[in-house]
Length: 522
Ligand code: KIV
Ligand code: ZN
Image (cartoon, rainbow, N blue to C red; front, side):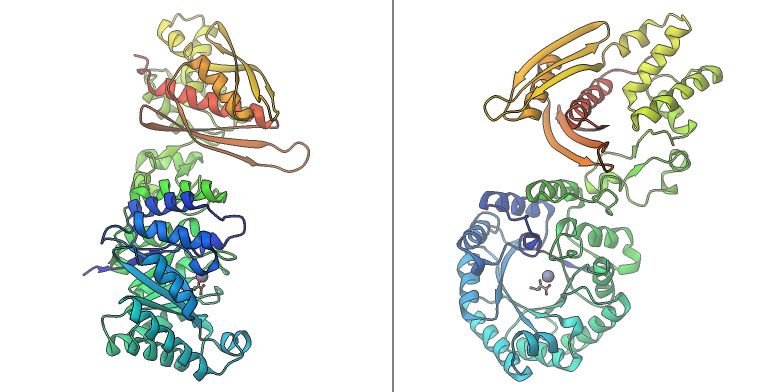
């Protein structure tokens, strides 16, 4: 039978420790509300003793997000009375509050960090748990640096704090030193003794990613009896980060027969949560990051696209819709083969092309793909239109369709603190359209000017700019995500001029909307 694994999210505590990622109160609340939609079991909302701001944020989250009994709100304390009081006074407003305290068990922590004996540290831990239990029934004890601790001392600590009333024991691999097989064995031995001592106490793990093994260690722990996993969104956290929630959850879902375990996570909210955390904290997700990276579900090589079109399971182990993405993304690039291009043309209504026509169009596609890097559906319309025009074949419907797309002709953007403004000239069919606008910044002005021309109710959801090469000729890549009529559209553009790349990306997104709302050529 499948075991339930509790998911404890520490994005707002361990994740927020990343330099520069600090959030203000309303941002923390927004992330916590999204974590609730994701259906995590426990939110660690902060470290309230660290500042008044953090205390207030934890309190607000306890009141506004912890107002139901299907989510627990906790916060971190060191094993000292003042910290425990801070946690208590901030989380007590939740329906299900939990006090989380941490104290090291490795020789390095006991002797070097605290300069005390093992017995002294153990007594401090026990007293802290006893005190916390006078405030709340649920108390988690974290044995910091557990993976580098002497096993028998680690167990004596766990035994003593459980007898003092701890209801959850968390075993951290604080410095990401553990190795999956070894960590699995540690959890197996601890779980065996713990369940004999008190089978109501949950055994939890908290793994760091210093050797890139946080997810593997967490999963090894689940296989060996851990009941609960501590994770962060996008794997953010101290140094190399923590186990990524999306990786652990999707591994448990995808390899259910291996782990025999499940979580309560609503995986369709994974991408929304990842994007929110990334944009509010200003921490970009690496493009090839498992599950939440931009390329995690994008297939660009011809061989792969060909295989996918024949049978999706050839190169796809997770349907992208399961994590809240649109369906399979086939990016047409210079490496896309004939099969992928033919399939896209067929979907656009050009299924009747002769071999000779297709080969000519495919040759044009390759030339454009070399220049543009990514070719969109509307580009294919234009290629087909130009092909028929070159052949002097009258194909009015192709002509009409292709005339619906926008093409950048020129732009001017002025950046200043008073009136950032932009003027833009675009072509649509034979019409040349111009517009100017001011905005809160140069990109806002640019996008307002484009919107005035296209006259569509488009909302910009995401704007991301990154460098894709080095030096003076560095290319800037802009990615935008927009929403139109409740549907999300992505588009990219690359140019040495980042303002031009921004305009092109937005126009690509507009053209994607146009193409989706046109019927295929019949
Ligand atoms: O890494 C760690 O040991 C921690 C504890 C507070 C659980 O973050
Ligand atoms: Zn940690």
